[in-house]
Amino acid sequence: MNGEWDDIEKALNFITEKLKIPYSNARRLLHRYICRGLCDWYQRKAHESGFASMIITEDQKRIMEEALTKFVIGRNLEEKIKRTHKYLCPGEPCSK
Image (tube, rainbow, N blue to C red; front, side, top):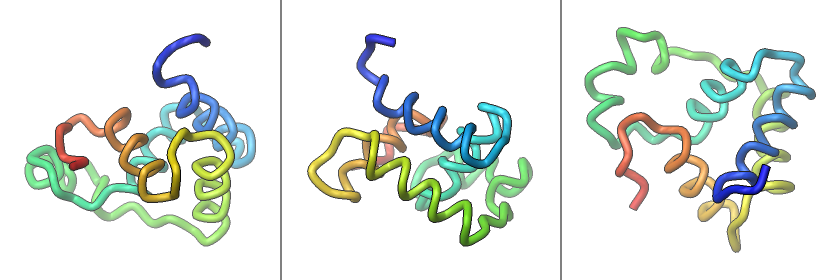
């Protein structure tokens, strides 16, 4: 890894390892955790794809927040969330 988004990839790998889930599930789970539903994609596809109704457990929340805090670049959690959302969301730009 040596790219612009390595910090987020490290966070995703951490989530994958801690929750013992596939990488694709970690991406979807983290996106759901940080998503505020502001983009076109969410309005059009989130309900039909099951994304909007995903349930996140307290343990999953704790691990995702730990991953964001430990690995993602940003001065505070809000910046880290925006950066991560830019990387994960198929409907970007919506993290303004």
